[in-house]
Length: 71
View 1 (cartoon, rainbow, N blue to C red):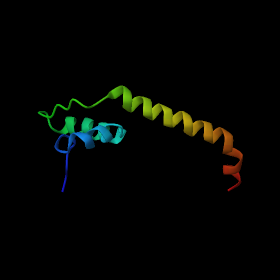
View 2 (cartoon, one colour):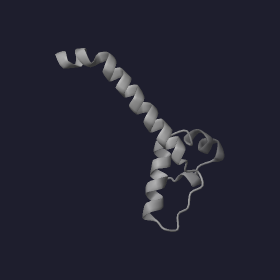
View 3 (spheres, one colour):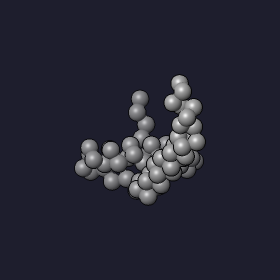
View 4 (cartoon, helix red, strand yellow):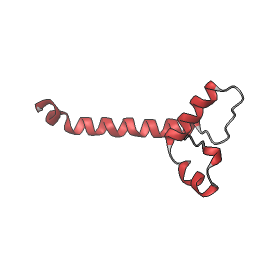
């Protein structure tokens, strides 16, 4: 059973909107179906989350690279 974002109740939508994977799946669905035009997609939100995770990962890598090389 596949449930799309528009079919869930409003209270659930307000929680799901903070999941960047929802935005990415909406972008992918928009590419597959020419008539699908979601209003909830936020490109800046997806890019910000991705950039923040990359920066956080690089900081962790910089801090723990010696320990990782010993494994």
